[in-house]
Image (cartoon, rainbow, N blue to C red; front, side, top):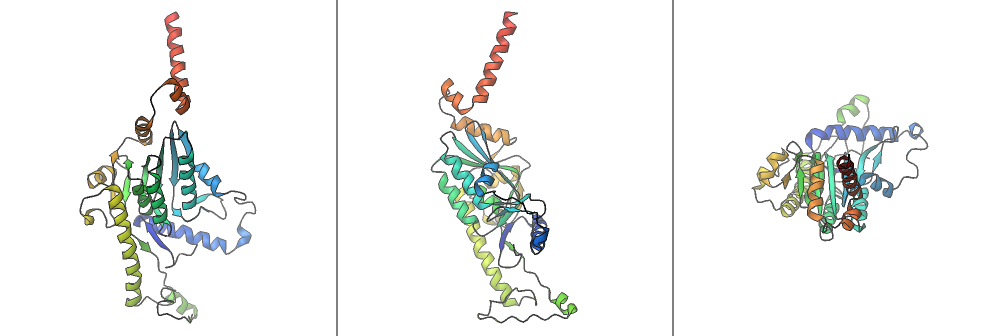
Length: 311
């Protein structure tokens, strides 16, 4: 889990330091295997994580994405707790929901500052393609920023409460520079490489202007792809500088810009919206299959009313 220039991130800027710090701590622990519990997460698979993210609300599969997003699910060496959700688990969870004949619609419920760039566009493309099979939407359960918003926008429909936060459409990287530390420690690192940018950002010296421009070009190219995906899938017509420069917006502010499709009260309201839109003809048989708990509640209420009338 290196935190160097070989990893590009799409993260909300105010969350970046906290996420980077967490990864550095885990990397430090990984260097000491004896500190790792022997039974940590043994036997857990991507399917397990995908199942733990998913619940059914009538005919809607709700897939919760909480925390930073990485290529694979990351768990703490000491705690065993998940601190980053895997793109692979998200893909499996969505695929399972789409394949389930009892699911009428899929809702990603996201509370995430973003995550790694690698793999995000590919997962976003997958989510966009899924829309041809079943309705897919996103609910902003607090924050859907940067890479998380890239995924949300791929569903083409983003529902958020008035105070939910979206956006941060940008790319960031962390290039550590330890030359002062090495100098004080009397350490000199000598890299031998072919290709003038091969040793760029390795840490023993500051970046040259040419190297900084090289890295900036990479980020600018990815940022352009990010913005094009968001604009195309959300149908945004507002001028790009108003929404595409890593600004973060509240749901009520984001709707006029096109970053949010609908402002809703809460997740329950988002689920109810999808249920009403995608429920088949409401025969008792169909309703019993789609929402048996609702049918039982209606029957219980009818029985109670019948008892009252008989008294």
